[in-house]
Length: 113
Length: 109
Image (cartoon, rainbow over the protein chains, first blue to last red):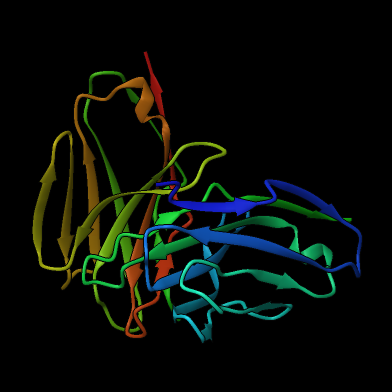
């Protein structure tokens, strides 16, 4: 099993550009999450999904969009990149059980200039 | 508001024991998690507590007191590879994880 994979690993965007961060998991997990991690701060939940076709906002959804057309894939879309979106983005997945260990992808380091 | 507090940084010696504390104030409580994150890498799961008391897993143990809003992670027989950040996270009423900023643990020979 590859677990959770993310692409790209690094990306530099100009202000106003758009991009999609890809996330795929092969563990048949129902739950998937997108977090951002800024230096000195805890992980912040952007969006999450409890199954294909179902998504919901987390703590910091502004400036982002998601879709979940399959169990495996959960892409994150940035429409108009802003410097405040410079961060490391992690995708994670879990079964959604009581102990609910989340499995994280390797992350995407995004810089907006 | 929701708040999770951990020390920013701690230093310990190889072979010793270290305790990393976490205090929380959240809207509801549905479990507390500890994750390890090496520099430049993704977080990995260490432990889960939902009832008061101590959970032991090899060299790592995690303690929870719900009445005090307090947890700690205890690492024994420290190894150089334990140098990492340790993240405390609480699952709130909405079943979302609220994360602390993490404690950077530096191990010295």
